[in-house]
Length: 163
Ligand SMILES: CC(C)(COP(=O)(O)OP(=O)(O)OC[C@H]1O[C@@H](n2cnc3c(N)ncnc32)[C@H](O)[C@@H]1OP(=O)(O)O)[C@@H](O)C(=O)NCCC(=O)NCCS
Image 1: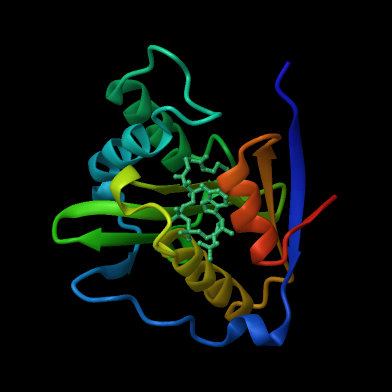
Image 2: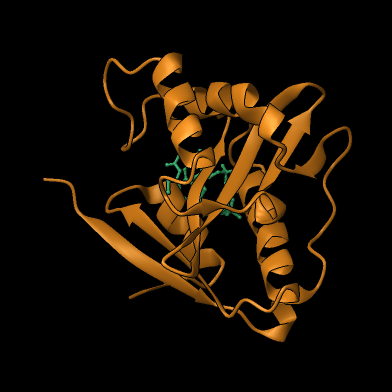
């Protein structure tokens, strides 16, 4: 049976400082609703072969997941706190934030396989955290599947603690 752990980052004034810049030619933008197809394609690629990948799922399933997210199924989607890293027209990493039961929630973080381990999820998350801290948020919560080592490593490195 799959176990998931809830984690929380307590935001401090230091979190409001700008995050490091992105290596060119990559760019970072807040999410637009028109990004949905690019996000679905990214989601499908990022989860392939990982702990959270559902065998047999398709890019269409990822598109439905993104549609659910944008429609508020995981809490009201917070476009202004959600970040996408672009390599030209290709979305290569993203951090997607909602407001769940009045608390900011990291609903998804994902990086395309050939862009993993370059610090892109960390950088996008630092930008989301900075925007949240600047807006006066005090916490960012998330839920991670036990054994998802890359995600657990990322979240621990940024100071998230199990609840
Ligand atoms: C989790 C995920 C978003 C990380 O993306 P990434 O861009 O490769 O992460 P980063 O390069 O920013 O890594 C930041 C830190 O996370 C940890 N980390 C990332 N990948 C790791 C791995 N394969 N093994 C162990 N730790 C890892 C490390 O501490 C890393 O810092 P370091 O490279 O300085 O050691 C990516 O692996 C992914 O898309 N996974 C599939 C989707 C998923 O499971 N998302 C999380 C669900 S909530």
